[in-house]
Image 1 (cartoon, rainbow, N blue to C red):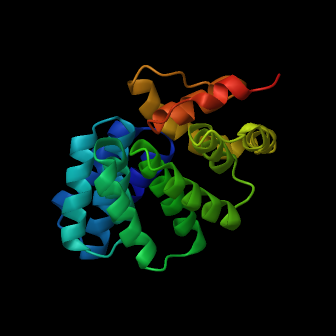
Image 2 (spheres, rainbow, N blue to C red; image 1 turned 90 degrees about the vertical axis):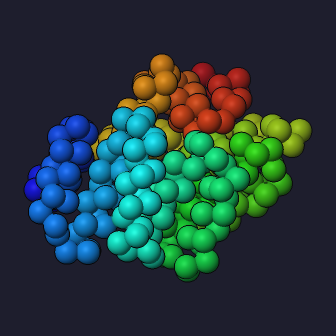
Length: 219
């Protein structure tokens, strides 16, 4: 059941992934497998915009495995949408665990997005700059930095231009990851075309941010 759920999730069959993960939990798996099943089901529900159910899965999984970074991150992501102040605390907890660079980058970006939603733009800029030091080739970080600079009355053009340039360098297979985020934005009636202008409009809106990048795109 667990293997099938993972396959369904990564192939975009989210309802099937939820059913498979549920079947796995019914079988009373080991603590390790149970924590992964809760994480998997929580993420599938998240991408279906069933945020309350996703949050419950992440919390239940954390009762089984209190220091599981995947579950902590899932919980924090839901909070980013529903309670950004709590999300800041949760991402700070993750960063205090000294995670690897991949998790650190994501936590910094998402904490920056949380600060952004709270209007704490200087703190958001600090986190984004730290994330860019880890992964300077990730376009989303530069796009977010552009939005932050606009709100700080700074010059955002260089950040937006870099985001656009880096997007053009992304291999098509990596856009599959972005398509999963599109599943959530589609539930909110947002565009899901990941090319050109719509690319950043969707990603920024899906994060709950202001899509100021759209006004800075250059054909």
